Image 1 (tube, helix red, strand yellow):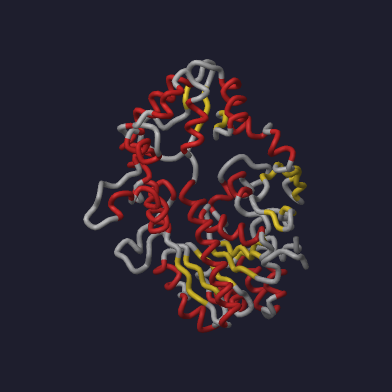
Image 2 (cartoon, rainbow, N blue to C red):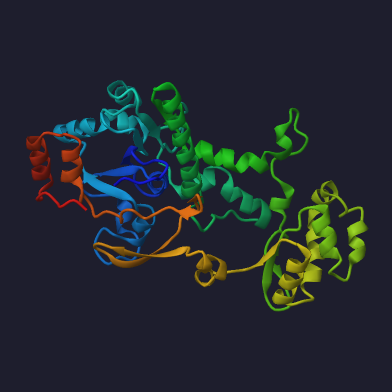
Length: 402
């Protein structure tokens, strides 16, 4: 399908499962790449998570697998590995999220893949960096939230460790991985040479957390301990109003001055504790305490109207169901209706990207397991007798191209 999308003409062999890898490849697919999802006969385990209209098409799978085709190969069998080598010869990107030792045991180490196709981008989305002693450990979002310091931040603030109720590591690191792959593609365009790109979840999550929490430990010797005090303040949370809650972050001196002028304590804009950003950082708990006292005196809507008029950054607390009714999102068509060929009517959230003021299209629905095996292998020039044997091994007739 010819498009004007940025990655049109690039083919990605996606050997990933669960969330981190599939979300990475979905981003590339949204940009126009042809994503070939290589699955085992059992399929991606996430196919079975969440409500579904048919087996293997659970809601969580649907969330990270649009704009893809599915090919089933049993890489424990020689002829299936031969077929994958045939695909590798013509692809531009090879991405997996197995442990480095496992993918090498299967015969698809970066050295071998790049030797076969010197122009391919080989992306290893590992749990832990292959150079370190943790390299053979399994990794999932919850585990990495614990190891990378995320859970302990809640402990420092609230006295008990906790996990973010979102697949924050999986999704955040996926964005990093997509960026790394795109950078490797630019290198390919400039030099004609492929690259081996590694994006381990653990190191990526630690790097992400330490952007602000390295803090005083940035210096040698340290000027303070780890942890950005404003983030760790127990007062940094949605603030109670007369009838509910809101979130506010006056940041600049001007914004704080505007805020205090709306309160019973306009004098606080001149208080040495709160006058500058440096002073506010040192007195963050006192600042939030006084802020909370004032917010208790008006309703949420009254405050939000005043903040809008006076350029103070603030917003209401919205549930996920509230977001669906949000006038801004609905005015831009964020919630897309989509008719899936096998799963029927759906509603999918938009991508956050726009090119030339246009959103990115959903070119292809999420694939049924193995729906494109025969068509993809045929297009890659795999011998018919080999395709027939693979389909026989899988115990099914050749599926129709979707």
